[in-house]
Length: 128
Image (cartoon, rainbow, N blue to C red):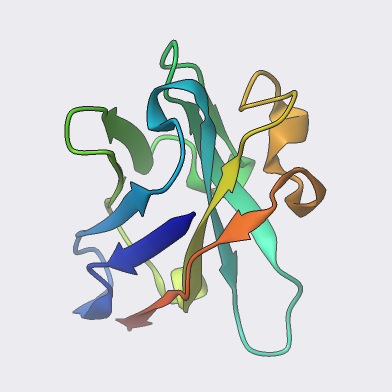
């Protein structure tokens, strides 16, 4: 299993970024793919996930209405469109795969305990 994130960078507040998570080595079309982030000195938090089987999505409250997660099953890639970024969004962003029971079925899927496979991360920095 391999997950590779890309698309991070430095942006000004109010701007947008799109992160990508390219997956391989498992049945992508029947999985849950989540995005987590971790800022310096803070705990890792799950912010969004998607079921690649039926498109169900979940969002953490702080990103609802600003972030959108989508899946391109033909490309085996999950995207996180991040709009109206603010400095509090500055963090290392990781994607992770859940091949087990939940697969993004409920908001409990935003807990890291469900994920066995993780990418290496991509840094997002938002300047004020």
